[in-house]
View 1 (tube, one colour):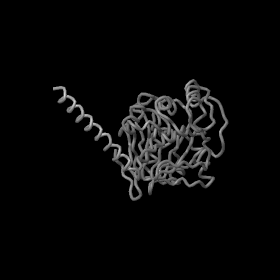
View 2 (cartoon, one colour):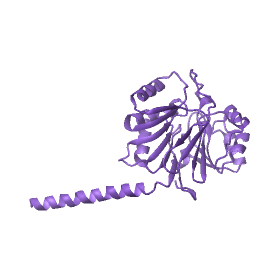
View 3 (cartoon, rainbow, N blue to C red):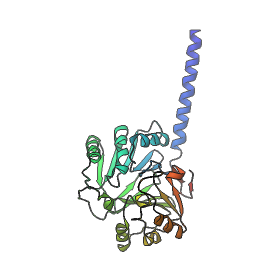
Length: 286
């Protein structure tokens, strides 16, 4: 009887081990594909870009619990590293969830602006960064990020190093970045307003992208018609909470997107919105 138990235990162990090894090999075999997921984190922003075992996480929404649950589903349990973490600006609906990431994952590179919102959540964020053994890079136009075999990102805004403090003004210095994966490009805009959109247009920055992450959750103060014309996306993602108190997305923004014949996908309606891309094609999978 004892020997039989040992045999059953050994067979069970081998079965579980084979499943784990098979999952790892399958995962490593997908290195050429990039997955871009606009996470449904309620009234906030969070985007996970994965290429094989490499990840770029842009913003984290307002809830640590919600974000960690999402990451636990999308990142294999054996992968406890996030290669690049980008905070577009330190508003609570972008930074709060990232506190849980710094506590639960090893982060290799952190990209931030020098904006000081003088809030308790940013103070907690900066304290955790000091404890993290990560390189910290100033988000400035021209900075390029490479993660994985088929994934690059370039920061388009802000133009210069940010050294500003004050409550309620951080949107104006939000990081804008373009993600390129194979033939597909994604423009991530944080919470910039029309003024910053126009500044990029006036400087002749190449804003063209296949997919636009609509700024500031579809606020009426963002997504001007000139900007939409410069980006010329086929699809637009609005990261927004259901029945939020701000009235996002604004009807003017939805109208501008409709006039441009741009397909709109909203996290409050679709949940997570995900694309899977390789060198030849990029498909909407969720």
